[in-house]
Length: 79
Image 1 (cartoon, rainbow, N blue to C red):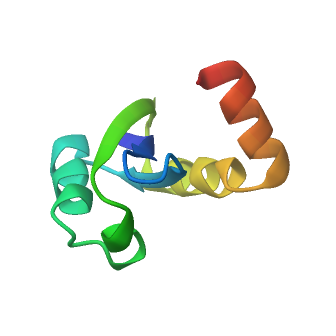
Image 2: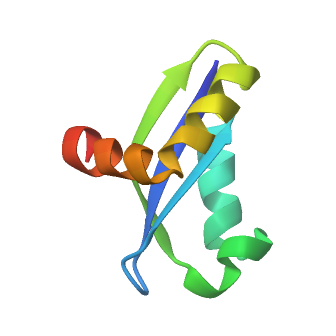
């Protein structure tokens, strides 16, 4: 199982979207500063996640949530 996850920075309130096959490990990576793109925005809280069957679908959904229409759907329907 793969997951597309949405994190919220407790520092600046911004959202971050990513994908993984291990949610607990990935949240720990973000909060410990191991992810370069989010290092300066930690700590994070998990706002939501969506489970999908395979990595390719997870990457496709992650990319969609990062588009304008995807962010809109994410904020209006999921969060």
